[in-house]
Structure formats: structure tokens, C-alpha cells
Image 1 (cartoon, one colour):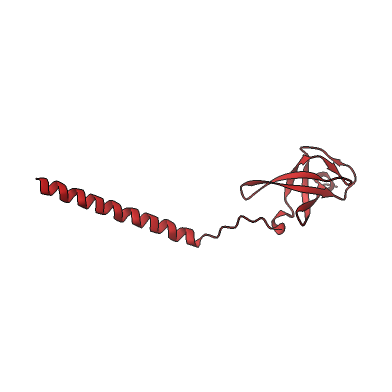
Image 2 (cartoon, one colour):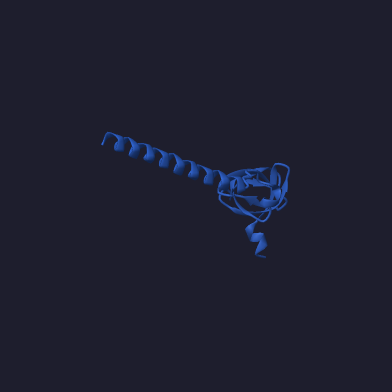
Length: 111
């Protein structure tokens, strides 16, 4: 009776280790096939809408916030439009220059 209990325990441990190894191997294989890139290139910014966080105008810089790839990112923003961008305004990114974005108002696109 004691021998059977030891055998069942050893078999259960062996099966648990084998299944665990199989699961870890499948996860590792799947992760090798994935391409992860946390860098946001300037090409991915152009054409996206953002929300003004720090108000600005043509004479001064501001800050906009946008959601991209599931992350919230802030960028310094400039514009060539006359007028003033208030906090909460929606803007469109038309160009990315170094570490800042050039934006226009959404209203200017509807004209």
C-alpha cells in the first residue's frame, strides 16, 4: 500500500513538471515570434489627434497629450496658426520636428 502511494506521488510530480515545462516552452516560443517596439517614431504621430494640456499660441510653446499604442504620451507643441489653443482643445498633428509636434486646430480642417 505504501509503495503504491509513493508511485502515484512520483507519477503526479513527473506529470506536473512535464506539463509545466511544456507550457513555459510554448509561451517562450510565442514570445520569440512577437516583435516589441516601445519607441514611438515620428511617422506614427502625423495624422493623429491630440488634446491640449498646456495652452499655447504661435508665439509660445505648449503641450499636447495623445494616446498611442495603449500609452499616454505628452509632447511639446507649436503651431503656425494665428489664435490661441486652450486646454482641452483637440488638435491634429501635421508634423513632428525633433522632440516637438506641429499642430493645427481640428476646426481648420473642416473649412
